Structures are given as structure tokens and as C-alpha cells.
Image (cartoon, rainbow, N blue to C red; front, side, top):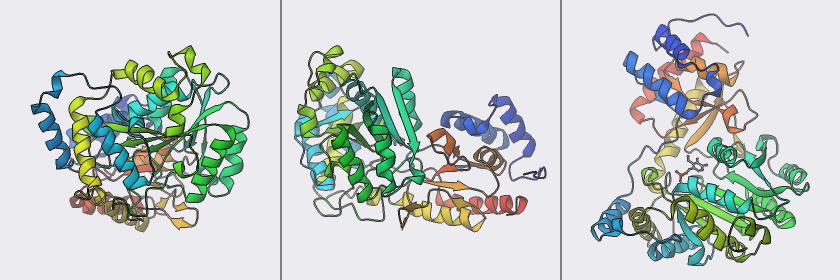
Length: 443
Ligand SMILES: Cc1ncc(COP(=O)(O)O)c(C=O)c1O
């Protein structure tokens, strides 16, 4: 579509144009999150204008006090000088196991609850074991859209992957689509995040059952990335030991690894600690092909003393005590961790309305027949514009986001918006800016 050149934009047109040119990015739509962060930092610096920064998923809330106190106490007791056990400190393993019982209703042996240096390390270690357990199964299947860094991990490792955008395959349609990949026999691991980064879709029970049953049929490991644990705010998942619980594929298969990050649910991203939970059955299983890389054929043993040992010899000692303290407080019903992050859902609700009222559409808008939850991310598009074009144009209006294209989404018209860094005091600016945008590009 041929659009008029508009120069009276909320942020100085020439500065934005020059900074985009200077950035050397040929296509802003293909820019990584960190490249966009740098570009917007530079524009902000030069113009003195504050952007509505929706490009990066950094927690925008304070960390739980229990965690900080737990870490300080552990440091005072001298843990800094001691190597942590690779499988994790006993006190933390116990609280992870309790947490999994209280908030997922799963019974897991403490031994199989392992701290990792963020879920980022958890996924790397999972790939090192799960994708090498069977010579014939050398490929990961990403149910996209997804978190781009996990694909980067595959590139770094030289591992193969296949991917599809789940947008057109929700509900019953997921079965045939998944099976079309699994029946080829080369898939070792299925990976998705739930709630999903970037689209904030949440799989329904029916969909999780389909995934679990197919994982059983084709003996595939499901790596369920719960980076946004309990953040489907449509349900109250905050009460320990009381249903409803966080939905999980673990109700339908024993072939699973759960990754629970502390970064978002506990606003603890800086300390780089997450949890890996391996099902009791999978931990015990033997895969002779693992011996190509590890001393034993045991899945759990290879994970701890093969992969995690090689990566970092365990997780920061004090962070383990911090996480243990937060989990204990949550398990004992003394700290409502969900309540402390609900703010994201409330922000999303208001921000989505501002965009919709000004001509934007929500791209991923339903979980089967249910409206999507409001949470950490949402997705937007603007009629008649590609994602690249929209991303670039919005920069002139003081709004930054990332293109869905970079997340394995086929919805090339869409952008991912992250609410975490937007304070309520900025909602007026956001409204003014999208209003002007809508006036400049009427639809
Ligand atoms: C889906 C998903 N998985 C994993 C991570 C990384 O989590 P961590 O900070 O625990 O390494 C993120 C962070 O944004 C994420 O969105």
C-alpha cells in the first residue's frame, strides 16, 4: 500500500530516521531484541523522549524479599567459598518438590528436582541429553511461536530442529499436525512454552492431552517450558495444595522435563536460577546411545554428572538459598507469589484496549473458544501493514516492540508487545501516540 510520508511524528522524524540508518540494520523487522534495545536507547538519548518500551521481557517488579533475605543469610554463613553440589542443595530440592506438589499437584522425588542457572541453562542441558539419547532421534520439534534463544542454542550445538506455528492447529487439529512430524521417527524432543512467549496462548487440557499421548506413542520427551509459571491469570493458581493447578503435560505422559524459571514469577531474573524437574520414570530410564557422550546410559545421571557438571558445576550457592526461601514461603502459604505479579495482567488489559480502540488488532486472540488471558505479552497488528513496516513506523511514534516473525510465527503482520517495563504513568503517552498513529494511517 502506498502511504503518504508523514514527518510530524511524536518523536523527531529526522533523528529516528538517521538512527535507523546508522544502526546498519537492513531490515528492522529482523532485528534481535538486543539490537532494538540499543537502537531505542540511542534515540531516547538523542531526543530526550521516553519510549513505550515493549521490546524486551525483563521483569518490571521488585524481587520477593524472602529471596533476598535468604541469600544474604546464606552468604553470611559462608556459602560463597563452597562449591555447591551439582544436583542442588538439599534444602532447595525439598522445597522444589513441595512446590511441584502444591502448585502442579505432581509427586516428584526430591532427587529429580534440580536447580539450573536460569531456565536458559536448563534448556541447554536438556538438549544435550534428550537430543542425544537415541541415534535415530536427532531433531527437536518446536511448537512455535517460541523463545528465539532456544533455537540459537540449537545453532550453537549444531543440533537439528523442525518447527510449525500452532496458530492454525489449535484443539483437535493439533493431533494430525503433530503426528505428521512424529511419525517420521526423527523427533527426540518436543518443546513449547506455556503460557507462551510471545503469543500468550495457553494450551487447553485437550491440547496437553494430545501432546502427552503422542509423546507416549512415539517415545518423545516433552520439554515443557513454564517460564511464566502460574501467570494464566484467568484462574487462581496461587493457593498451595488447592485446585486449580498450573496446567501441565505431566498429567498425560511420564516422558517430561519441566523447566520452571524464577525470573518472571518471582522477579528474580538477575540471580539466574531456575528449576529442572525430571519425571521419576524418565530420570531412571536407560538409553544406551547416551554412552556416546556420557559415562552411563542413565538419563538423570547423565543430566547431572554429564551435562550440568560440564556446563557450570552447579548453580550459584547463595541463589539456591534465596530460591529455597521464596519457595518455602510460597509452600507455607505465607507468600502469594502470583498476587505479586498480577500487575502484568492488569497492565496488559488496559494496553490492549488502547491499541484496539485505535485500529489495531490482537493477532493471537483465543485459546480454542476462550478469549486469551491478559499477561506478560500480547500480540498486535495493524490493517494493511506488514510486521516490519509496523515495527519501523511505530518507532517514529515512540513505541518499540519486536516482530513476531523472529519467533517462528507465520503471522508476519504481527508484533510482540511486552508489558513489563511500561508503568501506569505512561498509559497517557501510549494513548496519545497510538491515536496520532491511527490518525496518520486511518483504517
Ligand atoms: C519462554 C522462555 N523460556 C526461557 C526463558 C529464560 O528464562 P531464565 O531467565 O530462567 O533463563 C525465557 C525468558 O524470557 C522465556 O521467555
